[in-house]
Length: 635
Picture 1 (tube, rainbow, N blue to C red):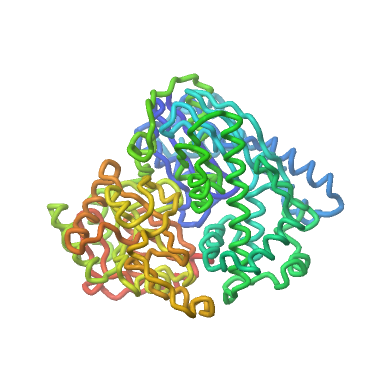
Picture 2 (tube, rainbow, N blue to C red):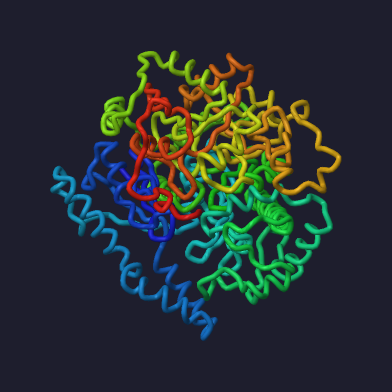
């Protein structure tokens, strides 16, 4: 059974293609169009999936969309009706788009796919009127993306995001090839929208900057009267968290349901005692303390939801998806709470992952196909038994493709016939403090770079975080970086031995690697705290001595594993810095040309693509007609 899943028209559009239940290809549209969070129909992603598998649209058994637009339209109408005359401007903005396009999504999807078929001259048999077009519910798509590729034969499923059609969170039970919905939380009450509201108030972009809020929280003063005061204000005025983790939000303080903004700025300023931080404004301690307060409240709600899921299903396993499942700190707190023996999170937990989930739901639930038995699961020992193939599901490029890019830009390079020799040279460059663009194999699925489209550096370097943020990524200095660590060496650096191949859990650095804080630490400024050397791995040790880890497994990424092993041979450290191969506001690079442009626009020292090494010192002077930074908006 060949199934194409599509998510589109909100944010992070994507496509995923299953062939007999195996994930054959999956990609985000933004990687091809170079538009961050591109919401448009994923034509390029669909074309890639078809081209990679050798299929045409006429050979698909069905195409499935990740949510049900009529139900979403029903929510909009009921919300506007209930709040009228408030929300009139939002109504005027939203409804014409729905009447023109989204209400007729079935026709729109058929027309878009028909255009792709016309491009493919070998697909003359495609008839859009005969296309088997299905629609999944939003949270079912999330649940299917979490459960069906997981290592579990049976599991509780928790999905938490902003909003789908009506649901904002759900608990379900997955067994075999079926998912049974048990409980859901409904709009306008939403943990995801609550977190986005604080993202907005603290000066970051909604549906983009939530991970920055999570990264800012450790700069808050744990246990301080200020953080407690903010938590009391939130619990006393904004939110009521029930025992099952569901939330009730005081809609008098929010505007997302009926307006073009998240909150009433003046009301929130009255509550918290300071105005909304404007984008790019200097961070104050009050911003950090409020970030910590809402992060801790989010963690409390997620843990309670997890406990409710365990009670309802009786399962020892949990599968998670939805945008809130990208909050790796909350995931870790839930894991440490001991509610479940095993937790698995879909690496593309946001809306892009809905394309994959919808395809999986069609294959197993609509097609009634049986899942392959997973058997006994112990994630601490075996992470290779999920179906995600390391999340390396996107385009890959040959030596011919890389050579073509080199010729286009007249770019000097050194080519290595032996990858072992290339890895050795690259590891030597890393050990000397160089920053390297690392471009290998298939592009990652999901928002994290996992060693195929990565910028890498030496985690021991005390200047590495500053250099990566300011000279290469061109982003805020407070933002932390993740370590890529050999899976077999995890306990040597971190307090966990549980693999985290998708960078969705955190762990503390082991105590013997930590440097004590100076006596005047509480009085230090945010910037002074940032550049205090906290461990012998300063580039990846966050303010609270934690790190968002990626465990690197030989089974899923042998090249990246080999590189870090070579680095360990030279330095004694089986861990390096890994950040996404892009600059701020840019999607992760997809093609060799994307990678070379990013390399030349920044202060990276080397670019390694396949078996090619490009040395910045040897390259021609880079010139562009206009400032390339104007291409990418602030994220």
